Image (spheres, rainbow, N blue to C red):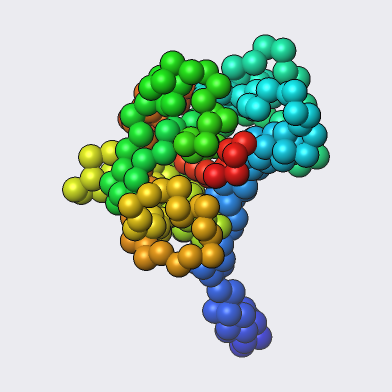
Length: 264
């Protein structure tokens, strides 16, 4: 009997050291899974961005004097689920060539081009129409007074949302640790005092200048900047594919300005 008491005491001592898995390890695991979702989303966004940027470079290098001085894309051009949007004749490989090997496309990730006529920078600036809607010129993406943006969105899966429809802490942490957070990447949210939806984080900047062209014609000149939330422009909110995927939902969102044909 004494022997069994000794053995039982020994087993209890061993079990007392059998600690549970540390909570921070569980958190790291979930953040890693969330980061996988983000990485896949960003891969498609950067692929379309690289293709659009290549068109400006290709035109600048190979254009002959008699060639038209405009790019082939217009607002609404994009990529989704392995297919080109807005150009039936163009092969999807022009974009997919920029994707990682083995990348599996998704039906819920959209990447599109939006071209806007330049406005003087303001903290709360909005673009409610594309340049084509404003000027009725479908080649306005090449104009020197035009900003070209590549924009992507994807609804966040319900597994990553809380009961209020907001990203859970693991997803928010992964988003916040991602490159460009608050400036050109985040999730769509609302902020008190701002009429438009914005990118979470509020780490974007806008130069304070009377003339938006000056900021890019003279990049060596230092301008004061203000911190701002990056808005989701009205023209994007009105896009049918955005409304289909993200209207009233939490979405990942990315936006980058790409130099137009004139280099602005």
